[in-house]
Amino acid sequence: MKLLTLLFGALVLFNTNAQSVRWEFRESGTNCHFYSSGRLDINENEVIQYSVGFAIVSKEHDISEYLKSINLKPNEYVLQFSLGVYSSADKFGFLGDKLDVPLQLKVNGISLESYENEYGTTFYIRGENAKQILSKLTRDKTIPVKASVGNIEHSIPLSTGDVDFVLKSKLLKTCENHFISKNNE
Image (cartoon, rainbow, N blue to C red; front, side):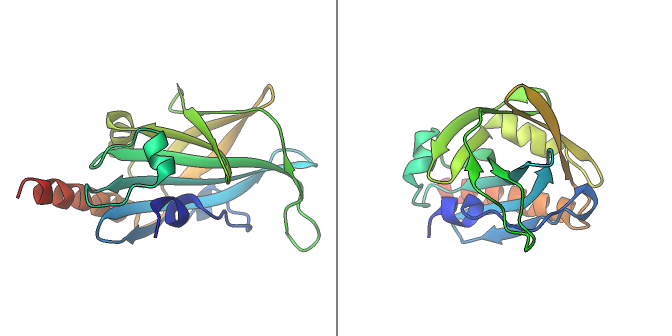
C-alpha cells in the first residue's frame, strides 16, 4: 500500500469548516501520518478542494515514486497539501469539473514547492521546516494557509481544533523515535 494513496489520494466531497476539522491518524508499521480534508467556496462558481497531512516514513518503507520525486528521505517529515479548483457543486453536493487555473500556496508565509501528479497539484514542505511547523501547532490554533487562485488570495480555514490533535502529533513523534531507534539497532 503506497503512502500517497493512503495519505493524499482521494479528497472528501463534504464541506468542512475551521470549527469542525477532523484530523485522522494512520500508521502501517513503516509510515505514520495524520491528515484532514475539506473544501472552500471561493465564489459562486468555484470551489477549492484540499487535503493536508503530516507524515514520516521509515527506512523500511517502500517510498513511492512520487515521494522519491520530491526527494523525501526516510525519517524525514513532510507536510503536504493536495489542492484543486472545481466548478461549484451540483444540487447533490458533487463537485463539477476540475478547472485548470494557476495555484500557489503559502503556509506561515512560506511558499510551498509544487508537484503535478495524477491527483492534481500537490504542494509540500519537507524536513526541518515541516517539523518546525508541526511543533508550533497546539490545540485551537489556526494554520495560516493562503491559496492564490489566479491573482486572488484566499484563506483556507484549517485549524487544530480537533480534541485529539495534540495526541495525534505526539503519536507522529513517537513514530519518529521508533523509526530512528530501529535504524540504530
